[in-house]
Image 1 (cartoon, helix red, strand yellow):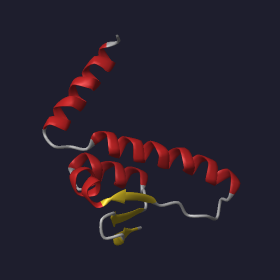
Image 2 (tube, helix red, strand yellow):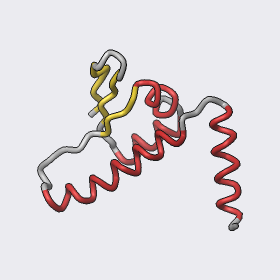
Image 3 (cartoon, rainbow, N blue to C red):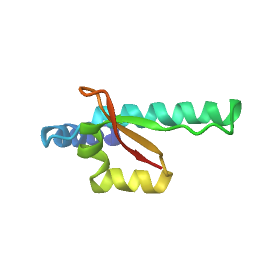
Length: 92
């Protein structure tokens, strides 16, 4: 196993022990960028939003790393509460 993979996994486990929801954030971002690549080619005028659970937003995207990602990539977000089935906020 390359060192990068070993350290990545250790860091991920440490962050998860600290209460971070890394898997949800990583999966959401990965899916967003995959869809964005396709939509840019098929429907370039369409705006794609990342819909994210309120808890994931608060625990990842309001932290320095999450803020950095949002700033660098200018990801528009819809934050929702799945229990109340409401949109909590739009971030453009």
